[in-house]
Image 1 (cartoon, rainbow, N blue to C red):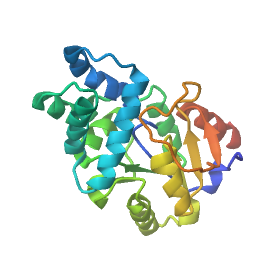
Image 2: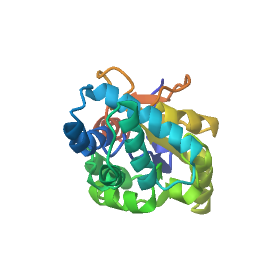
Image 3: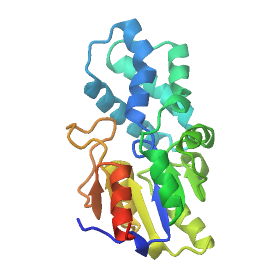
Image 4: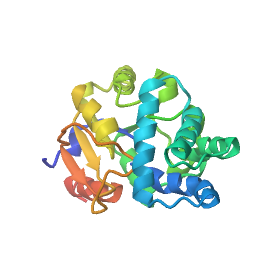
Length: 242
């Protein structure tokens, strides 16, 4: 990994959930009513790993399914896996829970700073309505938003990246001037590298161990690894001379 030069890039593309929005905290909070009702005796990491396995499988099998419907099915399959069936109401509530998932504490300030230097784009595995709730917590107006609903597939499929690069090109940003920033090696770094983008790994799970809600990825080497958006901004400020 090398310390890339942020000044070389006109646009930063971001994953949202896991990178800017604390989806693991949001997922666990949204599953808590079901866990309490069925008295589910599994630890949080086991539950997050199961979520990641089921979610990614459904995304591959049903690329055009809207994310709230997909999340609801995740809840149902979690119930089956742990022999603790969820009610329809619980599944539907989980499907609507993205609106309640919190932003990481450093996301809004970091984005506000970066917005002064780059175009900012979102490449996200949710639907437009769900992202609209999250956008309010992030505090900036993104120059481009590409969701799974827009492209009819879920990352790590390449459509988000291909469409995002096409739309940025229409804004006058050459692909050589685009840097992708994300937490998930599986959903983001592997496909970003396949389309030739340099990447920054926001390793939010550093020190926690395990994969959490993100499935294991094939080997990939990001160009820079930092533990947070705040740490990314520190490097950016240093390179910009303060």
